[in-house]
Length: 510
Ligand code: HXC
Image (tube, rainbow, N blue to C red; front, top):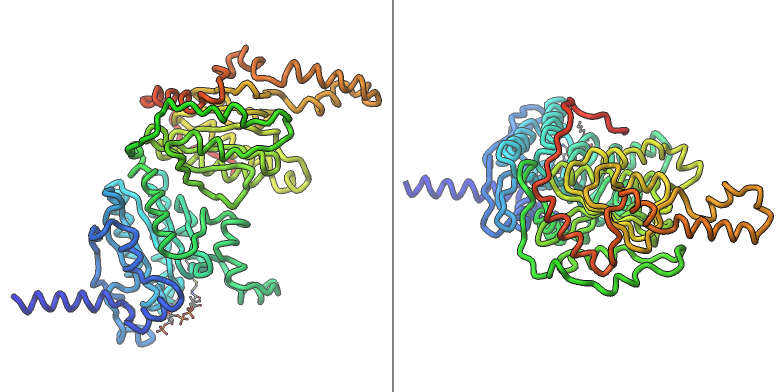
């Protein structure tokens, strides 16, 4: 018996070494952790239980039968994050470059199936040279099996991808179908075709980092949601994110202990909006002052900064925030900000996370690049996302809510539950100057008349009361009481139920 136990321990030791000490050292020399070190950092200490540690590939081509490392290049299993169940896979670059074989894929699929069946988030750590070249189509089939499960899991359990090394070719499409993608600066990259192919086909010379590094994907393409300095920071941030999320679409997000009075009065908010309607102010200040303990988890911080998305807690409960940022492009909606916010709204709606919308929007960004880029369809994504959301929604208009953007930003008409406005709000078809120049075109050459018309328009429309008179704004509130109002509103909506007509699924503009 003792021998058998020792043999087991020895087998485990060998399996834990993956591709061997030399390759582990090489991984460390690049500033990367190993697959198992990453899992250990991600999960609560001692909580990890591994599946399929002894699985090996079955390939007999190209002399592969001589090398059969246990685990086949991916570590899979389950554990907890702050006591809550999660499933995880972590590709082991020290074994055939973390490449995906038929059996490697089967291990990932097993974990995906478990996560879906048992309703727990799935976190995938990607560090892989892509399809196992020696296995050919068997590997491609394996990818497609993983993709199919990503699709099935979408909207059922939160799926988070962490890119901690190469992720290239079709392999990118598994992370692409998950809810969040995190990258590590300088050591990770994602692209459909690498720099060599790009050079051959388009003659462009580009480095891997420029083509698909963390900075590219968080600032330019918006493929990734955040970039971190190193593996340790990235994994700590995944833990932080998981704390905001429910385990699945049938459960509520966790309620965390909170020490911040929900009735806190924030007098400084009374002066947040500057007297001049064209002077910007930082909407993040408002977000930080509304949430419990000023804790804000921002998503896509470096992309489309004219809109802010992320999570706060109010009375210990997760709330998704969407807010126009007057500091960037005056907070207007455009292609990028519409796409960013639409995806975020849909995520919150999938997972029963209430949505708080903070509005200061002068309209949609004009221009040929916007029209040619399809701002009509992209703007419609956000409109559609809000209109189909059935989670509790609270909206606060701090200043401008002009034109179509007023409708889009969780207006009463899209079934938002509570629509508040600060006294500084201006709900109108457009700014006073623009409106005057259109409806009083005949007076355009008379500055005095134009000034008078502008003032008349401002007096009539640059306020929240026209909308409040019609019930489109439920109440005009003191800025200082915003946290209290929002907290009470969300508390009253905890049992919200909306019945929607049966459909297979909708046809959101894409
Ligand atoms: C088998 C692979 C491999 C792969 C790397 N290795 N990629 N083995 N299949 N795809 C092995 C290497 O042979 C090497 O083995 C070890 O992993 C480490 O690789 P290195 O090249 O030494 O590492 P590095 O210099 O860091 O380069 C990493 C790399 C490079 C950029 C990822 O290995 C590379 O270009 N690999 C091929 C990438 C690729 O073309 N993949 C297929 C893409 S198509 P030893 O024994 O020396 O340690 C694809 C389609 C998916 O993925 C489609 C889904 C629909």
